[in-house]
Length: 351
Image (cartoon, rainbow, N blue to C red):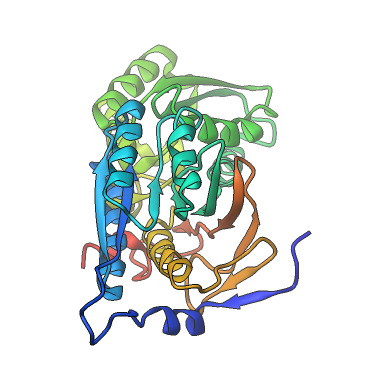
């Protein structure tokens, strides 16, 4: 049961922002390791930039290693970080949340703190996983999507919905699909057909074009797992077929600059946004806290911060491994906040 306690971030961060070696310059610089699944993705680039910026404020350094969605390479890179003597790990997600566990346990054995971002390993211990809930956010997006379909097609809609997935077999794809189908499977009159978008606009374009050709006027909606890297391809396929993207109520999670622009253009309906910049910033602050004997949020806490889109954030037991899960809020754009809201990471990094 979630307790009544609340942590107010502002006070804590004022303490954390004072590097122990400020002024002396004699202490060795603190180095943190960061392993990411694919640094080329816009949201991952934002995560890396936020972590590096916050580390710089604290006088620390981040060593970032990109696995390029190769879990064996990621395990080797984690070994390299251990060899370099890092004082903490920022785990920026993986393509295989089970296969990565041996690497996590090596950090556990050396009592090196870990902050998980994006997704969480399915074993070992992370001190805190900071993310929106991928499955629950996908459920929320699916509910908005089907409600819009029902506005146009009645309470018991019939037709075909195209689901453009990420790479099949990817842990993130599995969670996106679980949230989506937890809603859509209740509508027996809707046939969901999948196209594997592979986190790529070209693949998304091809799959959408093929499915639109096959099902034609039966298609009543298009759902995209993560519009930040696939919606542009989907929209191009719709427009190439001389159709209006707005008629398909295109919805998903994770916005990115591409998704933001499509919303502004009226070509997407809604996106549950992933607060990746905030997650990375908080993760660095919490690693710093642990290194300096300070406390971090625990299960039962509710973390609050004034005017922050990610707050309030409830801390619950991590369902995948030992440790806590700080469930950041994922605002719905443009239904809860407008696409040009200055607090969105897409706008912070493109000022």
